[in-house]
Image: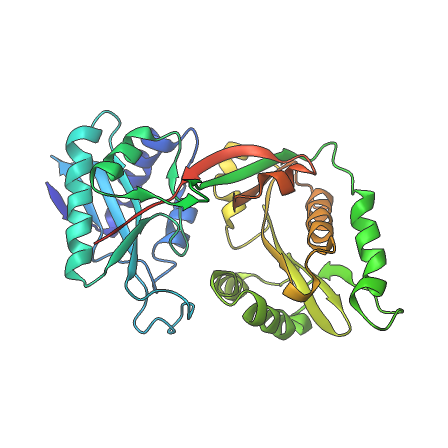
Amino acid sequence: MLRAFERSDVPAILELWNRRWGNLFPLDEALWAQQTVGDPQHFRPDLARVAVEGQRIVGAVSMKTPPNPVTGGSWASQNPKNAWISFVLVEPGREADLGPKLLEYALEALRREGFEWVQYGGDPSHFFPGVPREDSSLAELLQGYGFEKRKTEGKDRLEQDLIRDLSDYQLPEEARAALQASGLAAFAQRNTRLETASCTRENVPGLLDFLAENFPGRWLYDTQERLKVELTPADILVLKGQGRIWGFCHLYHAGSRRIGPGIYWRKALGPGYGGLGPIGVSRDLRGRGLGFALLCYGVQRLKELGVQRMVIDWTTLADFYGKIGFKPWRSYLAYSRKL
């Protein structure tokens, strides 16, 4: 039987989640709360359902939708007709009978709400960028209901979380050299160089202006959400010069108030966990090695903060991050379909 989600269901859902995915994606109440009730602009508790047998929860499905209007607390480029299924969760071994019931309910509920497109994962305050590659039964379920994999140049688009142990990390000379050369490469004034620094409260307006100009979608939105809860913006590393912000990079560690995507699965990382991302530089300065420099200084900063193992989440740029030793850790495939 499917029934409406109740807040009192959370402990049982967490137990079910960790029976299903706990080895790879250990979920705790803090992350659950942040990604669900902590995102009231998108999370739809009225649409969420649990599958119950007797008093036992054996399945659950959760969805998110854009706010109405889209500009109200979200990002302007968000498609108002696009919805998300955050997860379809079933008791191990019950995929064949419970999975279809939950998915059919979700698709019909979103159709009734007037949505035209649905994506699995990748939602605001997501749990997963897509379907974990390890969960083949979930992928088969979605394919059986018309979901298709996103393609890039004719190939399945693979999103990855990358990991690195920082015990042997040293700041590459290439990163120092890129910043040293920035005065000559970027500006007419040769005595002006870019530098990396922790963001200050005084930098925040310039940071938000930079993001609105260069990354006006999700990255601006995620930064605004983070700034609402952190005591200080210092864990956002900025690239600055000439009184402007030219790049940014989010850093996460055990002291962060916001649980960033790189540290979602911190229980699988062990003590001394950390994460980095998103990261980006001004379109005017790309191709000069400054993004790489910002990355390297961000990793160095996390090491100085005591991080031992760190993750860069949700990327297709394994070769870029691999230049400083990051290797694949978790992988996802993006699935979506018309409603």
